[in-house]
Length: 92
Image 1 (tube, rainbow, N blue to C red):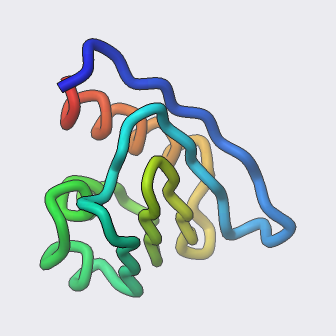
Image 2: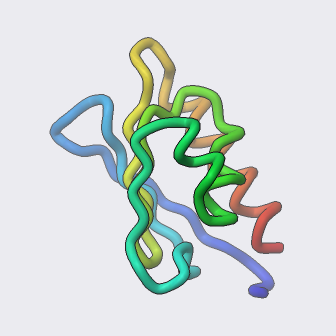
């Protein structure tokens, strides 16, 4: 495990999709795609942890990157704060 994790975000042209970048590998070697909360709950350990974040509609994990699609009406601030907290707890 690492002593720290860095997380940055980058908006996309779609206001409901955001990229999250980390300095740590998030997948187990192959990209992961989840199109529902139920799929996340049955997915990899990182996906299962992120299933606790309210407002995530879809999740794509590839290496050190997450692509998150939010549910309508959910503010990015809340999603980003929860994703950061969960990933910090997961890796530290």
